[in-house]
Image (tube, rainbow, N blue to C red; front, side, top):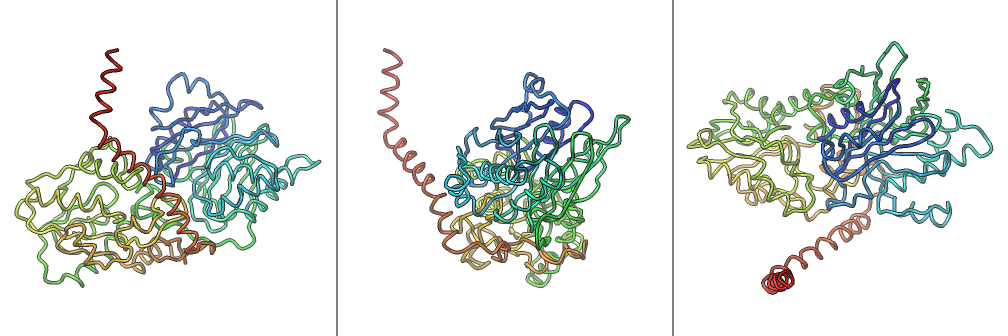
Length: 514
């Protein structure tokens, strides 16, 4: 999961990009990067870390120009990543292109081999974004061979990209001397929207993953980029667009609305906050059906994304709504933190239970989702330690039973607490007295209630339906093998360190003294 932004402005763009990335920080806390175009020269700075830590005054001064792109990133593989894989990426031919990507290519390894054998291009990292950039560069080269670069050639190139890529992708890229090219995959899995600002010098344009990045810095939301569509904005501010896919369909990722997006964003015509309220309505009805005789004294959310659903549940049940958990905002989102040990350690650093709200009460805790169960288990225990008599746990999302391969960090079945287990078994694992999940159909209907034009969704982590049609059991097995191998090595190293720690410490002390 990542957040991307691209801007064609009439004034220096570095501060605009910085501010937009701050507004998208919730989409990625692992790395950040900005590339700007000043004439025919690109300037770029990227590193691991939060936006405020990656960009200092000296870095901002080194990013001149009136157009640029930026990205904030979580690693999709769930482990710490190298700084070399921070985005944007750059390739010098043809023309010079820098690119940032939100999503995940499911056929990137095959494409990497094609790059070497057929296209004669070298891929230097393990990032699917570098593969995507080189596919685009190759298609642009084919489309412009002996010709000038114009919108028609670019749209032909994007059509070629769509034919080769599988998976999810929302793209912003800069082409040296020409302009900003953006496009979205033919299924519209990852979000991308267009905004503009009228100035005395002319129209300024911005594309971003969420509308909050546009509106938060004064741009007017224009529309979402359509599935399969490409948008090109030249450096004079002229916007061109064209459908480049043969059979596009809109299948937005429903997990964006459950958890990933900011509540003040609008994605594909759906205000995120309203969708979460509606999820709470449906969840309340299921709690009434499944737990008619269970006394509930108070409803509490896990801050922040479950608040709207929890408020609606409390309202529908006629039960008091209280804030019993308080959040340390300086700890990252635990669901997407690399490594299970790091996630577990950070839960109690992130949340604190206020005893006065729990003591002697039957508490209904609402969370947006339950993925690995680690956070839920810790939260239930915190509620019990704070004095709760009973803990009822409810999820505004259905059970996460299947891996997500389209850019969200939950790729292995063994890590999903609901995979192969009943609701009662999950309840015992997390330590809750009762557990209620949202129904898949109710989740989808909650979104359709707001935007009836949305007929289908990318909801593979809930229903196991992989809409790109290329995901097999063998593919999932290969992902798990690749993911678990380095984790196993890390565990062996940790065990070795623990067993050998005393002698190593003595050796270190001896070397220090000498």
